[in-house]
Image (cartoon, rainbow, N blue to C red; front, side, top):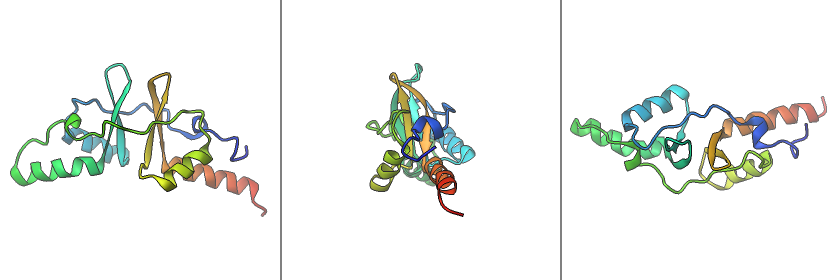
Length: 138
């Protein structure tokens, strides 16, 4: 398959792993570490995207909690409410260009107002490598 025909749907993670706004910062940080992700979508009880939370968002609250011996609070206190989400029909090359120009390392993938998965820089990199290996001369 040529890189121009490759869509987000072809390479994304269909694992709808996300946290809720009520999730504790502590639990969210554990989830990020366990899944080796730099950030996660935040969705409501109906699976609708309501934000995004990254390690960078969590770090100040965690640092303060450790320093003062307090609880770190909830995800909704640190999450980004304005988040870029993408369609599963978007071309991989378009997402690669977006990742070059913008900060997100992870994009939530939304279809019909529902979170259906995520796509990461790692997914994009692997897709580009596979395509290059199949199209470059030996």
